[in-house]
Length: 583
Image (cartoon, rainbow, N blue to C red; front, side, top):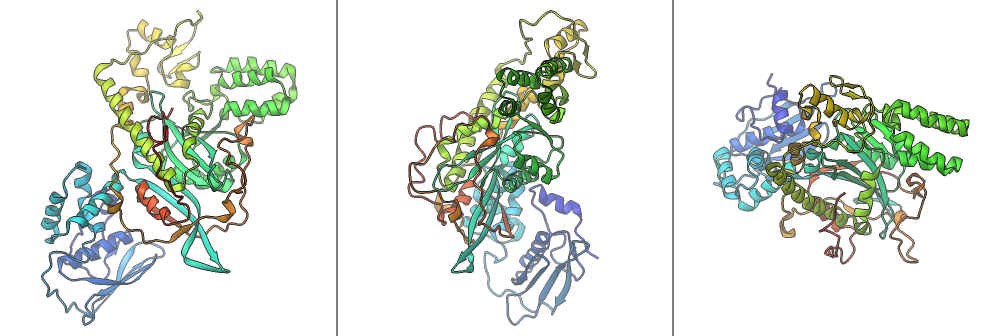
């Protein structure tokens, strides 16, 4: 039995081009690990033999093709096994009796998708390679000379695979006159993340802060964001989502995609407020995140319950304390005031809000300020149509990557890395264990960074204290976050034509047209008490669309829907694209 092994599949998953094992041989019983591999093999077979085929049927379990020539009886059926999940050629009908009689420089099966797989390695190594060189590569491999435009589109697809955007669109059925319209769908949720931000996160602190912000345009909704931080203290947005509100389902949609596509690393720290919808969604995701709470939100909750500003400050200090004796001291003060307050605090797991008990997972981040600062940065775009909002996030991140990458590279060539101990520390005795990376003051294990006591101990034993600095703080690691550049987006006339379903707005999310739109959310003592717009009329459709593309391809789909407002490209107002800090 012929079989294409997993190594062959892994080469595909790593954005590498691949070759069909034997394009001359396509026997019954040949197996393939995925449908894409099976399709590619059949295409290679027909291109090698100068013949063409037509797809008769295609779904999740069957792929049936037959010869394009009606006089030829050749037919191939490939099925997906229910138990083994392996695709297999189960039937080949009729001998191949036809051959191409026309001399052609191109081939029907030599599509831009096939060319993309062929040139993926080349474009990865040299993104600036010319299209003419790629045409020569295709000619040497397939003996066909493809057109310039098809090769250019294939190159853009390869760049999208390498530098593109992970998007997940969830839609609902479009009902008209009591009947479902198959060609239309109602927008429900959208998730997107840029590949360079995903790869840059590998060099950031293993901490993700999540929060939501209202949209205040024509339609209601909430923008959810996940923010990370590099070793230089600069924020980097790694994922976004537009949902109906901060509901359990909305957060589950965002966090599940965040975990699947952006942060698959184990033992990450997720910081959020104590909103019940977030806690419920984290439990549903079934991951190995270390979910911790924002200390500021806990102190605000405490204040709402017990109405004591002094005790609220003590609770905040208790959360920030780096040593367990300090926590005992603050807890005793609260206990002397109210036993109910102590019981209220004891109901919150210690490792989820006390820095001294989190084993350094927070890296010193005790609040959701990382994500909440992005709410102000994106405030000027939260009234834009969805496609324009996606474009705005793309252009802003692009500008910041270029700026910070240039700065980090300059720092590497001109600055020597030093660790300066803080001044003004009280003269006390602290135990330091370098092997266990422990100091009694708590800073060493909490911040993954040598405190003044560790530096003194290293100096005493003539040891280089830099070896105890986490690699996340090094200039090289900071540069690695921003070393790759976002590709330039081509003009709209070169975008692929969108032939999918038409997306329509959800009338249940439309705002009351009366009055002036509010551009800021109401003042509140805590973020978790913000109002939530519930949707009870929307029935979520049972299918999801997943693509890898650029922000402008998302715009191509959304532009044909009712989301688009006139004047959407007026993004040159001050502070909308350029000159905004992501901090």
